[in-house]
Amino acid sequence: DKARIGVTGLATMGRNLARNLARHGHPVAVHNRTPSRTKALVEEFGDEGTFLPAESAERFVASLERPRRLVIMVKAGPATDAVIEEFAPLLEPGDMIVDGGNAHFADTRRREADLRERGIHFVGTGISGGEEGALHGPSIMPGGSAESYESLGPLLEDISAHVDGTPCATHVGPDGAGHFVKMVHNGIEYADMQLIAESYDLLRHAAGLAPAEIAAVFREWNTGRLESYLIEITAEVLAHTDAATGRPFVDVVLDQAEQKGTGRWTVQSALDLGVPVGGIAEAVFARSVSGHADLREAARGLPGPARAGAETLPGVPDAIEKALYASKIVAYAQGFHEIQAGSAEYGWNIDAGAMATIWRGGCIIRARFLDRIRAAYEADPHTPTLLTDAHFAEALGDAQEAWRNVIAIAAKHGVPVPGFSAALAYYDSLRAERLPAALTQGQRDFFGAHTYRRVDREGAFHTLWGGDRSEITS
Ligand code: 2AM
Image (cartoon, rainbow, N blue to C red; front, side, top):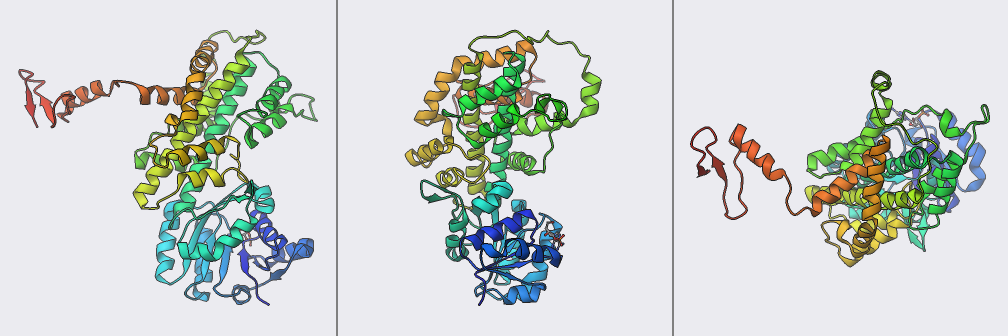
């Protein structure tokens, strides 16, 4: 008998995805460049379902029912191209190659166009949720043709996470749409993590709480509107004690955050698309700053305010909760703006509300909050910004005073809060009656004759700055 689907690349993600498929009763062909991984998978987990191991690419392809569904789970980049070139010649028109790695959407667009000419569906697919998600139910974001989703959708929805009976998998849109949305998902994840990190820093250094006490604060927050996987694991990490030293775990970890690139891509794409994503950008930069040990060492002696340390500021935890929620709304609004801009640029026709729906489970940013975003798009599918949704606008209004106070407290105590600050600046920029961009335009016209538009008349104007300063129509 043939396999319904095949997975090649059996490192942890690929192996767990194959096991997930098998556990759901789908006979799955398995293959890996180094055959020992294939053997190990079948030996260890063969009783979980029907695995069809193949040592060669030819045998692997031959073991798949037609049209063939072949999932590639290798490192994004040259390895993906190498594996595509290994398998594509063995496939026939109508077959599907699913790339479940973290490819850049531009690479996915290139590969999709190339394979489409050869009659093969290329389905760049974002898979979120890490190793656990891959095994127990990830959030799945497939791009590619609608036709390929007809064939793959039922399988992907079956193995995805489910929330209230709804699968966390849906067809995102053509070619690179799936990987684009996965990229923005990761950018939002960076922002969410940064905002949580700033909350922790403030609770520690402005409110004077110890890590174990802060863990309790996060546990409490996790029973309310901030309920989410990230808040939950934050409490776990903060409550953890290092066995070797007996100190809080968070105090023995080197404070230099690493990154694999999807956050950076989110910001790079946003710059290309002209979408302001300051909250996400500050999160990427915050990791970057943390990693510049030389700069930090050089600057360590610079003056700053005396830190509050043991001083306890009553009411601060509640205020921080509000600042966190408000900033989180902004970060998500920015991410969704980027999704809508990408969708318009590439003609993907992405349903933003559906993205919020499939992020409710399986992925790292899964949260109660995403139901609110889904509801916001249900109420107004074409809203230019989530900030004006009735629920979010009310929450932002309610957070106002606390949000501003928290940032003031942070500045006063010398605690860096780039995420909170960027979020508030974005909020204040959008709601401003007038922005100083008018002055910027004046400067540009002065030094470069770049012209400006007026508030009271149509057209482009230039002032003769070096002459009599009269205005001419450009
Ligand atoms: P390996 O076990 O033979 O190294 C993660 O690195 C997964 O991608 C592994 O299963 C690895 O196979 C596979 N992989 C990486 N580069 C590859 C390549 N160029 N061709 C095929 N598989 C590759």
